[in-house]
Image (cartoon, rainbow over all chains, first blue to last red):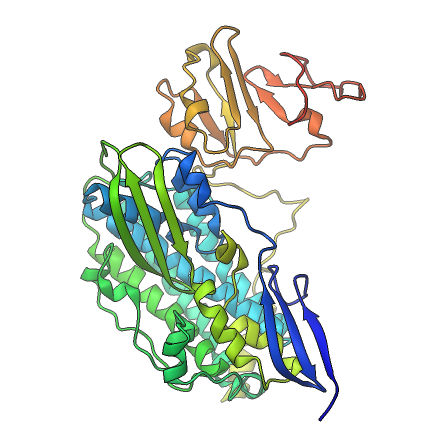
Length: 359
Length: 140
């Protein structure tokens, strides 16, 4: 038995874009335990609902996370619409779905790039981000923002996309799919990439359920769970199946995300083909009262929204449970037994977003 | 098989344009919808009702009805566009360019009449090319 040492991993680490801190208990080169500490970037956004009007709050909620920003805004709007009994126009639902799926494409391409960077494949990282740039251009053209759109409102969306632009987006989306094929083939087929991911950080079917994993981490272990099947927004009208891989290792989680990129591109195509004409927003009167829970599928997994209104324009209580928070127990389960060199890859496979976790 | 794929990628990379832009030489072209920074476009229409100030989630806008004051603190503004959308007289607008970098915090306030230079506690001299409008306030 070797001597035990503690290695601090983060909050500043070349592989981590965000301040996740892990105290790794090492025995020679093997990790035998990990103690997480979070709280470096806590902003108290959930408390702010008591001081901001529920209409203004959507812009604050969008800033919970930069990558799934739109889906946070959409989730909040959907929760408040449920609370106030509002049914938004169908075109707004389709537009929200298009932006949400584009967000998923850009989030997964960003993650694939970071993953390539984690095992030292710099050019692959740049190729992933080059493709992602096209998605960001679509965002800027349609909403005005590249990352944070501020386009969602309670009762619909602020901006419409005309049908010509939608047809152009359809062509761009097809191009993105073709370009992504060359890049994602490397993740799926390359020998050296597989050597770094296959059989590492295995989470079995039962463990994934017991630890409460969500999103690609859960689906990579063979559990069929995708909140989009609940049929919120326009998902009820679209044809898709949750993407599931059985192995439960880093490779399976990567493949789930790779396949989800193509699934999202297909969903965007379906949305553009089926989108109805009409209004994109409606006037919402009154103040929220009562309680409502909403669950949605973000790129990282299921997010849970709870809002409690008391009849005034300020909410009484608001709670968000983000996917990274739910996935941290899984990370702590897969770290013991791993090599020190594999820790960045393992930490990245749950797609950690600390600004989400701490709100 | 893999050899063919690599050859295809190499040929494509050799004969395609670079994905990056020659930034200082070629400036970025913004889309008509781009949300750059908030500006007061038509001060003559403004009734100084203060709705933009009340609705701002970041409390970056300050409006005074009596002294006809409209100020925005660029360092607080989150460019959410809510003030533009709620303005009853359509006076506010989003510029297509982003907020320019600032040399010091004293030039953070922008009013309807141009940027304001504030007096910092130590009494820093006012920057050139900036009009001095409004009252001097302490840095937030």
